[in-house]
Image 1 (cartoon, rainbow, N blue to C red):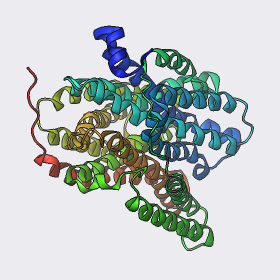
Image 2 (cartoon, rainbow, N blue to C red; image 1 turned 120 degrees about the vertical axis):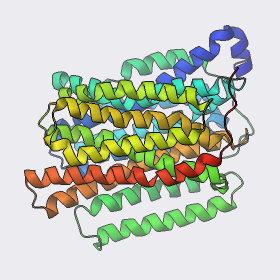
Image 3 (cartoon, rainbow, N blue to C red; image 1 turned 30 degrees about the vertical axis):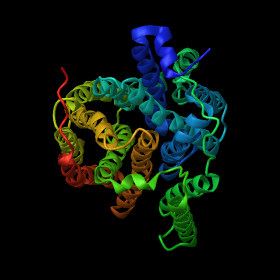
Length: 472
């Protein structure tokens, strides 16, 4: 029985596209939700395992770094194994890690399990984007990306909301078993709806390049993390920094000469893709950085419970989803540059406002301004997907989808790491007391806002993209 897209479309009828979109959205949503729901549980995990903030941040950055590396396997896995088997293996690994985490006794065990979960999550996301582009090739791609973006972008906000409630009532372990019910549903639905189009002649995976880039990412994050414990010129930091440089150099030299690269560097020959990548970097920093910072800020500085911090972000999640859906619809009608610039500007205002007036504000205002920032993020996502992939050929789509998601996740992983370093540095240099911690959080939010202001320039330069054709 054939399981390619054409056969499945004929078997299930006109609603097949809708069902497939739902499965893809749920799959990506549960992975992103898992990457952010842990944030409201961090104070409880830090107390349980006697972890400091520099070590605890690895629960977030380790997941994102592994997710970033996993993205590089997506195109190869899809070609070699087919979409259905790739998703089943990835979700299966994710489920096993979630169950094992419930009996962990050491903090390092949780970090290792989070890294494995991140790797499995990274393989799934680009696959979903490629399938949407293919199944909606006949029209409605912008609206489909908007619906997909609704799930993908609402997950980081509802994750802390649901996770916060569960942490208050069931403890930190709830952050790990929260995704399990949806994972089991996806395993069943994906078996029937996902295509199985493997390619027996698929190119072999460039294992050395994959290892070099993965080591470079983790060594770079490790160097930044160790700099919080030692001086920047300490041998611990220098060794990791040198390892990052050497592995990166080997990766770039090998990739430029390869006819089967895991990350196609040639994509950046296109000006539009380069500029979209800068926006993707800022998007990852803002999406994951703020989702990491805000719950910590609300619990550490404002004294809210995990549940209250999650509730505060709930309206933000709803508006994020609505803005993402609206952005997908508008991508087919107006110039993409306006959506990107509006989204970047709104998030910058939100982050700077938190830095200037957050400490003196009440629950309602904190909620409103967080929602403003999430609305900006929602406007960016579908527009960014269109801006980065529109100039690519059909053969380049799988690699382009993986590359732009890679850049976004890289921005998230290094963003959280760098923001944590800046936060700790400010906290210690200002005296190490509660007043110093408050000021450190404020300056970190302002730094985050400034990064988005800088991203306005490459976004504005995307105005030369062709205008969309109006749908009839």
